[in-house]
Image (tube, rainbow, N blue to C red; front, side, top):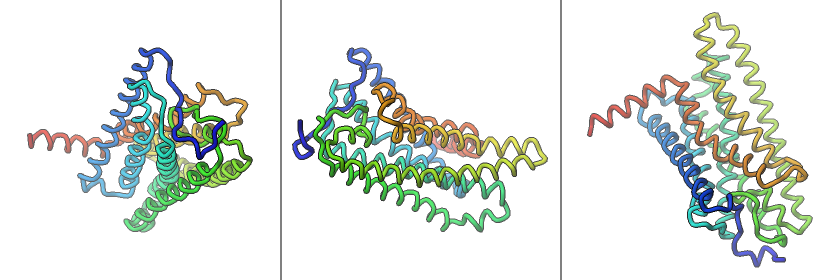
Length: 310
């Protein structure tokens, strides 16, 4: 039995025991990570390069890509390195840093998706007031608020979690440092403080979720009133990918952090963690770019311009 003061490192969840399967995991996660780097990097570069994309929707998409890149870079490279070197170690400080940045980015992404729902609602339901309601200063303030909420949440959760005495060993049943798994190592009832913070965060997330539901109800009502079938299709094509990404993100995060311990098992925890921490950053570029003609045209111009310079 060890307390937190004597713990110098944690042991992360090992992937399948045979060396061949570990290398398969290495290749799979590396491919996903490189795809996320490429896709999000192209979105960031394209939006920054093309001044025609300097609008609120693309400004928020730029921030989403930055958050996605940071989120997947916080967890996956360490897991890739551990699989390659057949290791499970992560230092105590490294674990705390990983928890902090992961929470900052994942919470920031959640609230940014909420802001993006508001952006789509205004664009479709009140198009004549769009530039007034979402001017450049307002957009900067909304994006900054999402980042600030993520920072404050990460600071509170990380400080509280790593102030708890840990005496149930140092094995974290996840491929990265995750608060629910670290709480299992606590031997003090003071862990209820962190549970209380999680419940409070879940309550705020629920309010945000209800705001998104109301926004999409208004969006769908407005879209159904559009006389042109092509106009309805374009509106749905813009909004449905955002709704799909948000739904996957919300369901898996809520399940990971609020599920009862009785249904917890390493395999289930692993699948859920991959769904909310690895899949969205990798598929977001595909969802947003493949269904967005403006972004595809700008990306094509960027690639063509780079090839011509060579």
